[in-house]
Image 1 (tube, rainbow, N blue to C red):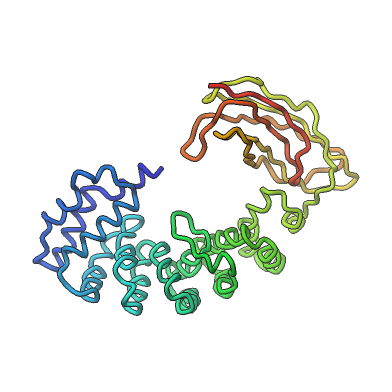
Image 2: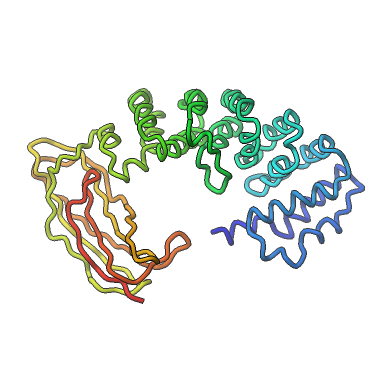
Length: 361
């Protein structure tokens, strides 16, 4: 994926950027600027390295102080959007720490064309109290991109971003921000709230479960946030998380006829598996049905990965038939190794049946 994403920054993008800067600052040396970026090392650079290369060269080719540079970039930024436009917040991240007010104003502006979620991280580290208040202020902004920044930028475990250790230890400053956003009209914003809570649940599950209990049933918006926020705990089979959604872990289910299409297969191959699951309860009950594979790692140990099948009400003594396919092709996120593996049927977080199988090269 990163190999494709990095191509958001390409010769056409850089030529367009040079053209737009020259419209604002006619003395801009456009050709030299482009050549300074598209040099011999360009193809070797990843996504964020390319972004940083562009930011650095913008600074080198704009012979002004930082406030004037920001003024020029504010005129240029509206001509770009999405991932490409994230180079403008990156400029603020690298060069603006000594100009707090100007930089915060710039990030507020730039995020409306892309996202300043990565760029705020050094500011959170250097000016934590001021930034907590700033994020709270952003959470009430009229623009939904800025409101999303209020949550997304302060996530304790934002992917691809530098960590904020203080917020991992104590996420308390985040909660007033999320309270302001939990019923936001924008799903884009609400999804960020859910992702933020999911981050927090990895270090403080009890706090997030307490919030989930308070928010559950208050509105359709908060119900969806709670479900998405607890996804990590649900996959781990957390009993409290399951109970919030009406699922208990008493073993009222029985698996039969569990089998795989082949017990020996090669990496890159796939198999089908099937089973029947029967409710043994005298009452209707809610079933979260998953399967789990224990993958062999490079060091020989096993690591379990959960895959959801369905979530539904099941009547007394009813039987569900399940037929699924699973492929063992290598992915950018998972490499397969030869050896003995296991597949489990999981009902409401409990492993209730398993089969061994072997992968070979």
